[in-house]
Amino acid sequence: MKHTVFILFLLTTALLFAQSPIFTIADIPNDDGSALVITWDCTGVQGEQFFVSLQDAENHTLDITAFNRESSSFPRGSLIYRDSLTAGKQYHFVLASADSALVRTPLISKTGTPRAQWFNTDKISLLIMALILAISIVYFIYSAKGGKNLYIRRINGLEAMEESVGRATEMGRPILFVPGINDLDDMQTIAGLTILGQLAFKIAEHDSKLLVPVSRSMVLSTAREIVKEAYLKAGRPDAYDPDCVFYLTDDQFGYVAGVDGIIVREKPAANFYLGAFYAESLILAETGFSSGAIQTAGTAMPSQIPFFVAACDYTLIGEELFAASAYLSKEPHQLGSLKGQDVGKAVFLIVLIVGIILEIFGVHDLKNFLTVH
Amino acid sequence: MTHFFNVFGIWLGAAFTFAIFSFLYKDNPFYKVAEQIFVGLSAGYWFIYTIFNILIPNLFLPLSTDFAANWIKLIPAFLGVLMLMRLVPNAEWMSRYPIALLIGTTSGLAFLRYLKSDVINQITATMINPFVGNNWVTVVGQILLVVGTITGVIYFYFSKKHEGAFGVSAKIGIYFLMVSFGAAFGYTAMARVSLLIGRLQFLLGDWLGIISP
View (cartoon, each protein chain N blue to C red):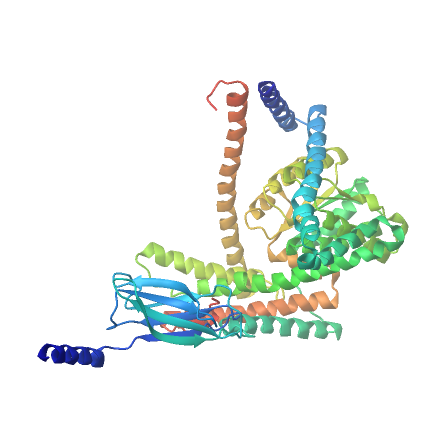
């Protein structure tokens, strides 16, 4: 009898002093509502093994994780659970312990509801930067349309375009335009094609011949539309030859072989390489150089610019390619867009300098705010 | 028979290699033949590739096996058909819609992508205390990073004439760019030499058997 009373006393004491586990289910902020974060703290809890399980309406459980006293996730741990969760739906989770015979005892159960957020506040800096850029672009487009004179500094490669077209006309030779080897999903190709429009306009005015070999079907269609429109704009629709824009092949080096053949046989007086280029840049530029043509190149591919700088007369470096169209056309919406981007650049530069000064003084708030996770 | 085609393929490869290399001398009939075959074969290859690797697995197969789950693919298919309208003179204008959609979508997606990768990530990566480092080489490197980034951006500022202090900054920026271009040139030139070595290994190893391939 005394033994029984003593054991009961020990058990009651153990129960009184045993800590209850901490088990939380929380929604992950700034996501699409497809994940929950589960955390536990089993300090002082009896049991050999522990299970975190998902429980459905019929009390069927699905184990999410299991750990024992030797695991790194004991006594405290957490995990992100995202297996086919639906935003807005409530889920039940159970933390259970098991003895050495793996007989489970539910310790605590909690519910959690994943929620989808409309805005990812981690990217607020991206929104602010985008707004600064967008507002300044829109403002300057309207300013330009209102007749405000917007200054753009001289871009050497583009000044030479007129000279190149004039030279080709005098020599009676064609002008070659290569819009790169990427498709329309590359901004450089689009920038190159926009310049093609300006170039085709000048060529139509001078009644010279244009050759545009392309390597993508979508670029073929777009380039033809652009050249046709340029000839119409120049008042020379009769001079437009749809075959001046033609497809060679999608293959990178097949295309290069074809363009090289055109350069050595047609002997264009001026070559323009404006778009996205890879390993073919030097092959094209070198062949063009050996043919004696005036060469203007432009790309935003950092690894290819050196070859163009070495082998071409004029090179549009990086963003100059994107500024070229506004520079040539002087159209208000393009000029305004370029001016707006410049304002964005000035703001970013100020932010950068302020950020560096703050970092020197050990203040990291601005950098942390701008960092997009 | 397999052996014959292996040997034939190697001889063909060697012949085409010489035909292409002959361009180093000047344009000639051998180069012309190799060029035309290369262009024609690759165009044909990409045509078949598009059908079997893009159209069939991404459009025809999903639509024929589970139409209800994949009917949305009819929209890009329709846009593709609009592109083909270029072949019909009176309906040529229809092809402008898929082009406009593609260019607009590309621009919109690229705007945010580049804003994050080329602007914000660049700014945060440059926001450092340049004077802190384990040794003086690191400190000098960090100072060059900060100065190079700031002056590089100034070079690409188009709304102000490059004169005075602004012009000096822009000039420093272009010097930084040229130094990086020089380094990139040397690096890539070495990579091109390795391509030449690969071709020579093919000729001397696979073809002539002078060296072990």
